[in-house]
Length: 263
Image 1 (spheres, rainbow, N blue to C red):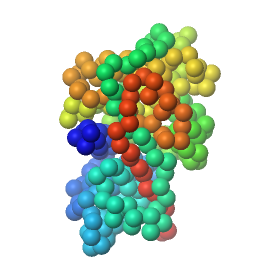
Image 2: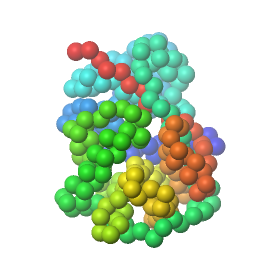
Image 3: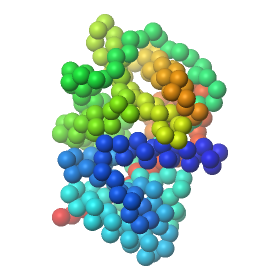
Image 4: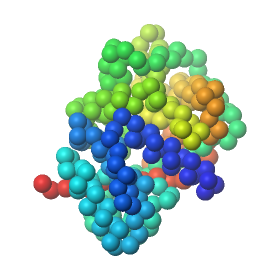
């Protein structure tokens, strides 16, 4: 299980760095994108190994040095982040966002869902359609855990998605020629296949569309040779139960810690 957790952690780090600058700092890795300073996944630290007070201070110094363009200080943590560092984040008034359960598929998916038409996001029109759905997703607030996300930040996130393409491929699920859902998948260099950023319009839910997206993405990732298929589920939201019914089992927890710095 520890090996599987490490595979998942490495795949997520790889995915977050796509399309962004990344710096190997001492006792951590920094991801930065001054073009989108308010997008947390584009401006953060991860792969933290700091344990002593001096090492932890060094990580905070690296955050200030390489993320001076943003008012946010963000750290992505996983099973391999030292407890001493997590304790320091809590002490220094970082806010822990809702926990994500990383779940790996055991065997085959147990349900194929509804017949759907999948359309790869490639053209400018496709990316505009994706943005429209992302704006609805963020306004609803379920996947952002109630966080108020401005349209500008939503647009920055979609720009970040586009910068990760085609390694991180988005698809639109179409119904009557209209996009009603989206999701993405990626085959990481370590052989892990990740399914991420799933969203379905409220009017199209409970119709097997999310299940169909997961089944289709699993097929594509297996065809690419991925030996592990995984996805993340917010601990506070109901989709975790769907994923469990489909054959995904919990492996590890990942966390995001955030603090807004005064300038």
